[in-house]
Length: 100
Image (cartoon, rainbow, N blue to C red; front, side, top):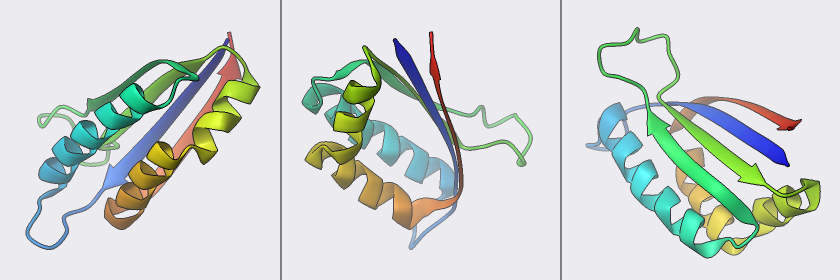
């Protein structure tokens, strides 16, 4: 099994706060969960508003059977659509993929 964890620091954009962008990301990631069959488990979590501002805003926590499943997820059109949204609202990204 492969675990894929990605953290994003989001920013405010055109009338949307950082937190509102996080809520929108969560809503959009639900479509990824529903649309990518190689994604065995996925969730997007939002950092607590009481946590330090230096924390990342959101984290994706995903599980795949194998690296091929992760690679298929990366190029899936639903994931690419989500990625296009994130690209417009992120200021930083960190990622790790590891085998369980």
